[in-house]
Length: 282
Image (cartoon, rainbow, N blue to C red; front, side, top):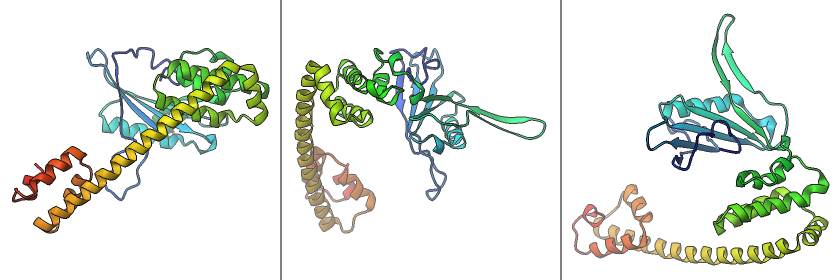
């Protein structure tokens, strides 16, 4: 918010509660098409000194695909859903290009609806203005900002430096390391230059990347094992329920499949003693 909507986020402090809200907007009928937001956020001031405000971030990799009508729909849906008029629409463009800045609906005499949005074209930003920023979103997006080809290695290095400085979570560091790699587009010669120009950081990044990738793989294997065991326990419980009580409903099946291992164990112990599914799953 501080990077893409600085003016609107000026009064946002550490006490504000930021809540990610559902991307898929509610539908009156299941068959209706839904509109999906990239990043909708609800800001709430617990002390009540300001009313809650919604930020609707919409990213477009191809500027030509941007639809101001669609963004206006998003914001109107949010305003209706949360019964508020405090909505900040923000459009983020990976590249520069022509796009509408406002939308006005009306007739010959009156304008009935005017819609505007904040916009940020990353390729329109000079990377040097953000090279030492303490905003991690700005630093991670240095490769997406305007820079000359001979500056690409420096852009890459400062983006990685910002990642290590401002993101303490190892899992997020690994995720955003991939983000920087993808958008930096370094060739083999530029990677060699990075090794020469930033030898200490290059060695640190190599060892660090290898370590956190190994930890991530180990954690993934552990989660996979736990998930497999959980699925097996759920299937056994479903079989026991069907043998004792007959055909079970989809709601019960879903509830069992989503239960944690401790709950499954507790329910399994009740199958032999209880007289109804409700009693087993209470």
